[in-house]
Image (cartoon, rainbow, N blue to C red; front, top):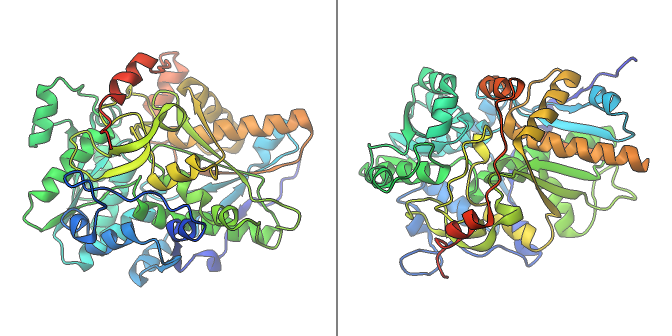
Amino acid sequence: MTVPYKYYLKENELPEAYLNLRAFMREASIDHDPLLNPGSGQPVELADLEPVFCSELARQELDNVNQYIDIPGAVLDFYRMCRPSPLIRAYYLERVLGTPAKIYYKYEGNNTSGSHKLNSAIAQAYYAKAQGLKGVTTETGAGQWGTALAMAGAFFDLGVEVYMVGASYRQKPYRKAVMETYGASIVASPSDSTQVGRKMLADGVSLDGSLGCAISEAIEVALASGGSKRYVLGSVLNQVLLHQSIIGLEAKAALDDLGEYPDVVIGCAGGGSNLGGIISAYMVDRLQGQATGPAAAGHQPPRFIAVEPASCPSLTRGRYAYDFCDTGCVTPLARMYTLGHDFMPSPNHAGGLRFHGMSPILSKLYHEGYLDEARAVEQTAVFEAAEAFARAEGTLPAPESSHAIKVAIDEALACKESGEAKTILFNLTGNGYFDLAAYAAYNEGGMGDYIPTEADLERSFQTIPQV
């Protein structure tokens, strides 16, 4: 079988502006509910956010008017080192599956951070440096965001302090080594280096930690810096989905060049950066009620599928409510699908998806039916799909991205059964070279599946504020 050249990217596919889904949602009269100040219960204002976030990022967080926001020149210059990222057709996987479907994936793992997280990290570091700050603090789960921010901090000569979820800190020591290579300092969370961390330890919070724990610690350190530092987050927030829209914009440009329009768009879902990035340009078509582009004739906007771990099922089993984004209850309240801010997920190998809530933007789109479906999958099934993909396509995927691979394979096999030749697009947002311990656990039969019981969830639901 002769396979056509499968990498599609062009220099002119690098966007010069981010796409702001909130503004398009507002135009369609479905803007998500505002963040609330937990003290007053009133919608947050810029002055509420500026002690925590860089001023420009705080403005982006609240912006529901500007549909496009220019990418700063220094950020564009950095992007050109690794962007546009390739859109790849999975010819070999199609052949192995025997499916009539066309499978495309956007590959974001071709940079040292190994993931899409660099898209937002470099933007946030730029705004921090432009504001004259000395450093930033953050959390990281699997370590992809922490690595990306360490790279961005080194580029702009900015200090970076990373609170890494305890389970991932121990599972992925080489992530720590890479972050330190770029000059970042790394602390396992929960830790005894912050007041909130010490309280969590005294309360018996597991040393495995969670993203919610790490967020609380990172915010405390930023607030205690006397104004020299700010906190930055790699997922969930509106500003992050804004920066990650570059993925969807590039994917749509490349598919337009090929005369293709997807029937299904799939992304893994933890806090929302991966999924929000890949669906961005096509979600605008859904919000505006028509498919657009050279190949749009005869097509409806795609069906969107979010894929999350069964061990941390915020969309499929969570509640749509106002909740804190962190375990220490120092963030504003966001209306989102949540398992409760005290939910402590099992230490599964997809550390980047171990967050108790979901992006407010994606939560609203799901609640209103614009994000069509959410599926929860078990990690052994995810690794089975990851290895099938690696053997067919030659790329070792990150566990997080492999959730999307699992459902892309399921959709392609459904096409095999029905005879439909659908076009499937998914987001492969990271490589798996720092996840070899997880692959070893799977191959050696030491990997299990954990699904929280209704009683487990009910306990954490009790922590959701009554708003």
